[in-house]
Figure 1 (tube, helix red, strand yellow):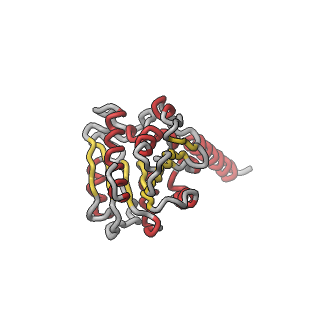
Figure 2 (spheres, one colour):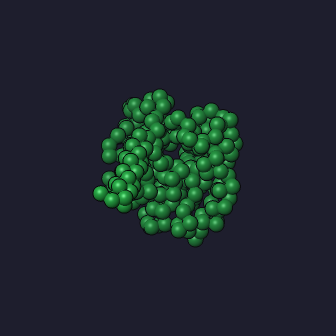
Figure 3 (cartoon, one colour):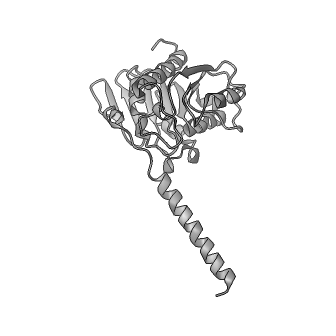
Length: 248
C-alpha cells in the first residue's frame, strides 16, 4: 500500500474517532438533580406523564398550555421543577425530549405534542438555550398554531425574524450568563416582536434555568437555583395569563 493509502486510512480512523466521540457526547446529557426528580412525583391535583412527552397535567386544566423545548445535551427532566410549578397554576406544561438531546434536530415535534391535546385552544411555545432557538424557529414556521413565545436564555437564529409577529412574547435572561450573555439578548432584539417583554434575573446564570450540574463555560450564579427558577416561573406565568385572559 502506498503512502496515500496509509494517509487515507489514517484520516478515516480520525474521522471515525471524532464521530464516535460526538455520539458519546450527545448521548450523555446532563442529568436532573434531586429537586427535578422529586418534581416528577404525581399527586391528587397533578398527574405526571413521562412518555412520549414529560407532561404535567392539572386536574382542572385551563384552555391554554405550554410546550418547552430543552437546551442542548440536557436530559429533558431537568426542567421538571419549573414545569411543575407552572402546571400547579392549572396550565398543562410539557417538555419534549429530543433526538440525541438536540432540539434543533426536531423543531417540529411540538406539532405532534399539540395533536395529543385537542381540548387546548391556545398554545405557548418556550425554550431554553438552543431549545429556545428551536422554539423560535417553530413559531416562525407555524404562526397560526402559536399564541405566545417565551425564551429562557435564548435568541432566535438570524434566519428566524419574528419582528412582525403580533402574539405576546417574553425574553428571560440572566446577568451572570456567559453562554447567552445580556449583550447577545440586546443584539437580537430586532428579531423579536417590538412589544416583547424583557425580564432580567440579576445574579442568575445559564444552568439554573434548569436543574443540572453546571456546563462547561457556565459562570457561577449569585443567587440560588430555587430563587432563579421561581423568577423564571413567575415571568412565564405572566405571559401565559396574558394569553389565557386570566391572572395566574
